[in-house]
Length: 82
Image 1 (tube, helix red, strand yellow):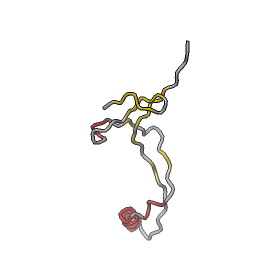
Image 2: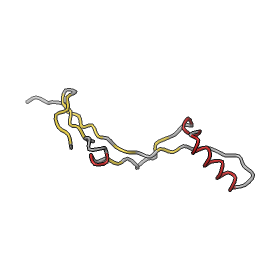
Image 3: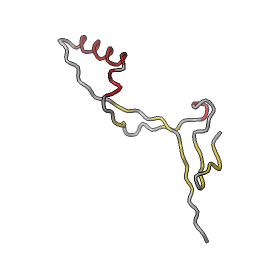
Image 4: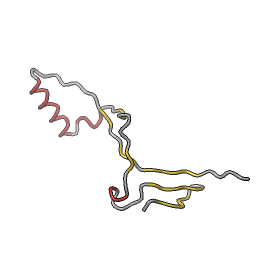
């Protein structure tokens, strides 16, 4: 009996965290500065890491009706969840 290799590709969401410090004279000033950094996109280049246990599968309805799971055989999609 032969053995055949398959793959299941799945699209997911996951949360990432960016740690950063803000120098300020008060907590309120720090909050305002952090909000400004967030709004301006300044934090986009800071390093981030994956928050464990936050991965969730996406449904096709959450992906503009496109498949979020693809069953693959020899690099070809043979079935999806669409």
